[in-house]
Length: 275
Length: 316
Image 1 (tube, each protein chain N blue to C red):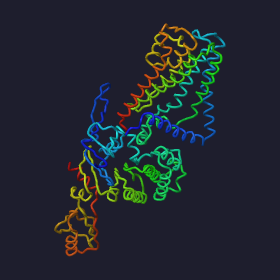
Image 2 (cartoon, chains in turn orange, purple):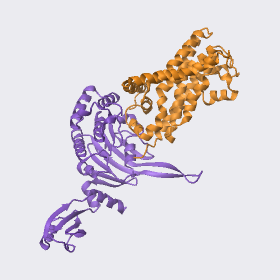
Image 3 (cartoon, rainbow over the protein chains, first blue to last red):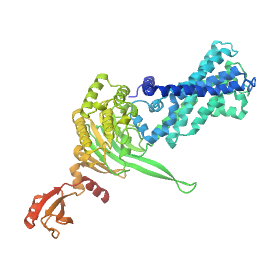
Image 4 (cartoon, chains in turn cyan, yellow):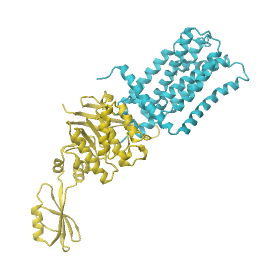
């Protein structure tokens, strides 16, 4: 009875685009507001990087990294978080959907319920962060001192894919707890937006314990830090194995598997609301 | 095989309560307990019971929203909680108190989105939409965003939405709640038609017993998570020992009327209320009242199903 996995995946992707597209059309009816919000999003996220640039008018390096290197780190994590936030960021509203009962309605439609939660109230203005991060990353790529051989190109592309998946997993994992609490939890945000804020800088500015935590506990270091060490050809400042620099796909798979498990468990244990 | 098969179905909820500052107690609440029933294709079943009796919990298990904690159920040959997404195409669900439509979209766009989500053939969709638009009088509403619709209009929209993909079963949770008498009547007429012409099996929960009287040949009554009655409406009356009431307007005030087979339950000036078993004939009672007293007017009140159900509950 169950469709093959590939067919289901293709269908859910199509359904996501349908639902998200509908929300884009709705927001387009309030054009001025939509454009202003998008612009504001670009500007607000942009201020972040401006702050770093201002800092570099006074110092030459931060944690042993120059401005271009930091731009590479910054751009990578911004693009990854931006893409994850664009696609699954709305999952953090799960608790509200449950309380309002709209989650029940989603459960009786023939589309994966995670897809519906993420696509609901889809906000394309979140592309602002992706756009801004892409600009910084593009600038960094043209400036960093790297011989772009195929391996480095591959790792850079892989970095963006795996980094997006890692943030996606953390978003979903965090939201799954709302099946138990139905309260919007800030815990997940601490790891996603917080993880993004921390990985904007070279991890050399943090104590060793923090870096270990960001590697093995909440593996956001795999979003940009380890692949960047590889691409920029920098030996691990903390003396951790070089293999970690290519281990982002492993981290992404582990995080996403945990997220899928947590989500499934949440749906199976869902209690709905009264009435 | 029946369309819906439910066997010893149970659902418990673990409720943690704070007892004191730190201590917590854990209670197990049995929302539904060992429920068993079958529904055949084409039936219209009324599912009634007081608040918190387990009606919604049952519906939510039948639709796959909630996973049962015990027992077995099958809807159209599907295990709802394991194959929820497969089941969604074969059922329609209307939650009376909240809409399943998109708040910001005009009705027409909501319907079109549903068509694509359910992958309904465009021609069939067109046909269904035309029919529902006419029967539910939706024509003038199609371009209105859902948030601007009145409760009754929205309910009609929701019911059309639940039927657009030709489901075999339609669950309605309080479909007439908050509607005025005229809207209720039209809605019932529509549901009857859907059941007759499209052979859609209907299971509806309601507080409005008129819904049941006018729509359902079969009633299931649930209380404290268990079925206390499953059968015809007439059987429910018999079971509840329901009574009919003869209202007598005498010419003058008088002492309580005494006739065989009936007793006075209330006296208000010249008006008196006599109750007698619903199964008995009213003729001999009317005859003896008319022959023994100066009667200005007579009328008979049919038994109130609400009283019948209250009677059943109170006896448990």
